[in-house]
Length: 115
Length: 112
Image 1 (cartoon, chains in turn green, red):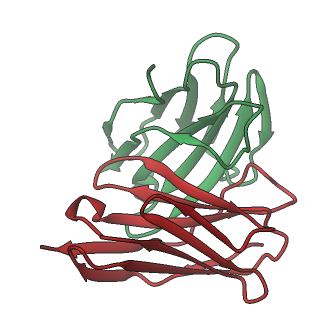
Image 2 (image 1 turned 180 degrees about the vertical axis):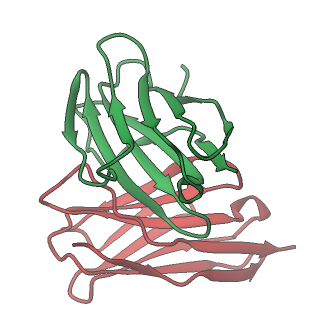
């Protein structure tokens, strides 16, 4: 019973390039959340998605960041024209609809380094 | 919005008890979670408490909630070296039940 899968685990990009982070939730989970963790800080909520819908993107920067969770396939967090300040660990979590939403199952994260 | 404060660092000897404290600001928080993060890994849910409880025990873990003071603590009995990690408390606000609000975490170091 696989947990949340994220890939790649490590991603290096140069300034101005695009970063695509993938997240496959636990099988049967229809809710996906993305969080960002800067060095020595806690996780900060970015976006909450259900299949084909963005429910809350209040934590997403207004520009360059987008997220999707298509009907088929993984959830994608996309960062266009990356800058050094985007360097962080990005965590995806999932939850089933019938459990408390705080019981989120986290993936191992993608560590993005922008050169 | 919710603000969560934790002390940054705690060092204990193996076999002793550890107590990790957390204060939060949103009194409407319905659930309060404790997560553990090991180096290079994601977060693992440890335990949680409903806001209408003041204590919950789960094997070596005891959670205490003082709702009046908005203070939450996690006690780990008989702390082991494998407990060394960063511990995050995460209240869930009533108005957005899916949005975990994390503090900076407490780094627990267990000395042999």
